[in-house]
Image (cartoon, rainbow, N blue to C red; front, side, top):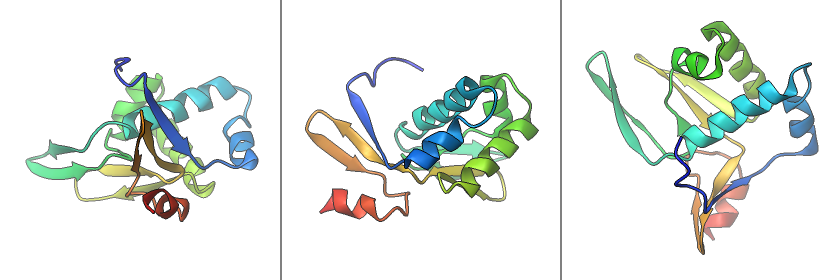
Length: 135
């Protein structure tokens, strides 16, 4: 990804337990790299993607990349991606929704973005703290 978001700050809601869980296996750099990759995907602006002739929307705060695409990016197979996302889902950090054409991953711990003085809440998150950003 380009470095065009250098001024953008992500506003996360992570407990110490969440951070410990991200670093729990023998290769914590891989888990953190993968999680950071998801955050970068989620920071992209709203887009419409088409697969098999069917269009669907990806909101800011969601990851529209397929498990296969993430596997290529992370240099692992699709089942490893699926297992990692399930672990994050169990921890309450993401929610994976599977539709007719693709899976969309909501980053639940991502509350919003700050760019300069402007704060944009992550409306795809169901985290109660998002509503405090709106007010």
